[in-house]
Length: 479
Ligand SMILES: Cc1cc2nc3c(=O)[nH]c(=O)nc-3n(C[C@H](O)[C@H](O)[C@H](O)COP(=O)(O)OP(=O)(O)OC[C@H]3O[C@@H](n4cnc5c(N)ncnc54)[C@H](O)[C@@H]3O)c2cc1C
Image (cartoon, rainbow, N blue to C red):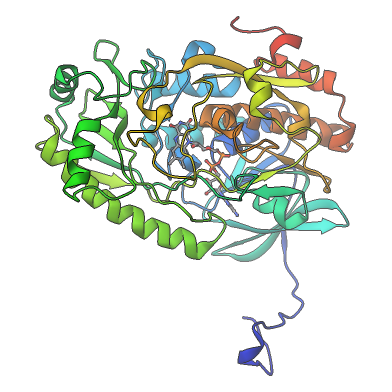
């Protein structure tokens, strides 16, 4: 209960009374957010000896991998590192991922279950159904967070807090430097609600794709993949169908192509990644709600089109849709270093490199531009461009945001530019950088020092011990 006397409805605010809030935990490392980065961070911290807790607002772990149902990692397992590689191999062992191709489709349900098992085995205490509301600060020092759940409003104190919320919620509230959206105009990449369809005759659809005239699909062998033998299928284009359906008004205005991924060949299940909602801000609850409704309306049209026009989908039915809308971009923090695309393309190496990450990407490929027209006939990145398997290094300077102490960033909100995030915001990369953040947080907790006092060479040694490829300065896998 919030007891306020003399409410003035026109004032635009109320003054909340001072409250006494119970401290329910005090830990070494507190990870806020249980997506790929948060899972990587919690494992990194707990396995290096820290008392670690993770807090997640959803009922389950996985972030965009499960809540947004985005079930594809665009990197071959041979080039993975750290706990991300372990996760991929264990998913495959359980029959929940296919790791034989350039991309790794996986079952979101398998991802949820494995996340629980890994965190429990590492001794991480995690609390789902819980919002991290705001940081507790003492000057610029973050000392913990306020949480809110069915048990009420409580406090968790920590030596180091890891912000893995995907939106830098804690960093922003604590006063850390950040930017929102694209640097030049603050626009953000589009949002998407994915949905899964079952009852698909994948072999028939693949045969149809093979029979289509040249130009019907993206020619990139890493994006449009029809490898039934390896069980890896990803369909990217159907431009001829999309154009016909747009002309008749059957497809939504912002959908220019059809995109299937996370394809489970054996069970005839496909994830449809097609709705695109532009001009919305993922840090604004009203925008998120509006975008979610709009995306679901787009999906109804998309489903009708694919069922009508694509052979193999005649008996398709909708299994489910993502519980959360997928938000691709919001805040990115600013630290001592800002990772940018020019350096990535130049293959820049760093003496303070803490991870080398591989992914399929290429120069000039603007993916999910905030400007729209994704997959339209004049959109080079979607119609013609091809990717290569490239690597880039992540320097230590991107993890600790300016203006605050006791807080480290994991995931897609590390200090980087809008363009660099095309390389570094993938789930695999986020899990790797999360593990780095968790290990660093654990080390400073053990030494009782500030993150800024951490000796980078000591961190690098610890990362290598923990199976992370740190690139040119360390022992590397593979070359
Ligand atoms: C539609 C879409 C398609 C994508 N396609 C691909 C792809 O094909 N391959 C790929 O690798 N990547 C893809 N990505 C990118 C990738 O999924 C994300 O960038 C990545 O998941 C980011 O990881 P993260 O852990 O930083 O954040 P998230 O995955 O967003 O996880 C953040 C977690 O924090 C929780 N959280 C947030 N705020 C709070 C709070 N205040 N309190 C408690 N919990 C909180 C959230 O519930 C969530 O579980 C896609 C993303 C989207 C949205």
